[in-house]
Length: 321
Image (cartoon, rainbow, N blue to C red; front, side, top):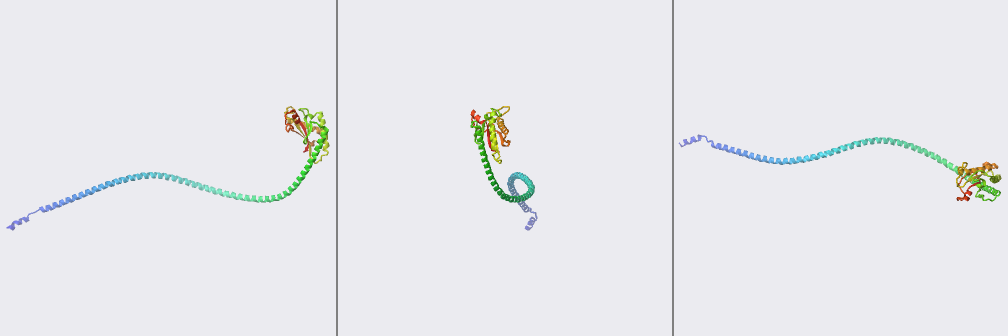
């Protein structure tokens, strides 16, 4: 009976243990899910937090990159400018090189032409040297000949000087004789005198004031000169080229007349008048010469009437032609 009462208990369904197991499993699942969610939330928060840090870092890096990019752009601009400048310089250098090559070609042509000119000049110089050598040889021969001629010329010069000295000495002798005869014939007068190698007549002895006409007394005195001159002329050797120079002088006071506008005309006219009279007396005209010196070459430089009288004169000089 007892057995009979227990049997029915075994046949009833007991769901509590299974429910508990299921519930416990569910709880475990829920706890696991919560743990997973919590862990995921933790990891997600940590990940997000790290991402923010990374984002900040990235933002800083972006800013740095932006700065670097700006600097790079600025540097790129400078580099571009430098590149443009270098490009221009390169172009200029290329142009200069081209011009230099052209000039080099021209220089080469000029050098070739210059070399040709130099060669021609060398040939000309050589030709000149040859000519100079010939000239030097000719000069040597001419110098030797000239030495002989110089010796002959020196000898001839010495002979000529000796002859001239002899002629001068002879002419001086005849001059002295001529003046001596004039002095004897004309007498010792203060207005007719010998000054050095000249026989001097004061103008008043021969001419009236401001005139070139001979007075009768003057003609008589000049006739004595003509006679003495013709006598001496016969004694002077023919190889002595003598001449009687007649020179007229005035004082320094100027003259201005229709016939004589100046002292030059007066002095020259008086000298010519004396020449013409001597010719009329038979003195050969080729042995006479006339010249006027006006107031120049005075004997006395004073301003007195006596000085003026001395400077107004006619000079006779027996000299060589």
